[in-house]
Image (cartoon, rainbow, N blue to C red; front, side, top):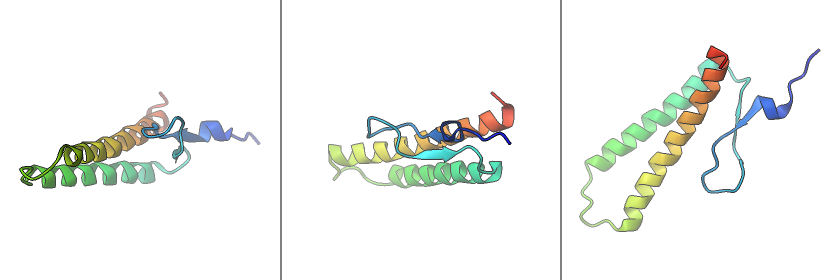
Length: 93
């Protein structure tokens, strides 16, 4: 029986605030679950950005705008990483 090395099974999410990966994607998760994970993050990011687009930034500071952009960037990077895992499985890239 062939066993897959854990370094092949678990794909690291792109590290943003650390020197190395901390969070990983299970490449053996079902495509339905991987898609649900990416979809939830994408929907959440879009809802968040829509909310922020309707907000008056008149009273906000630079730190507030940085927080908004970093939140969206983090969620979108997760989506990108999960979609890459789906592509590997679905298209054997």
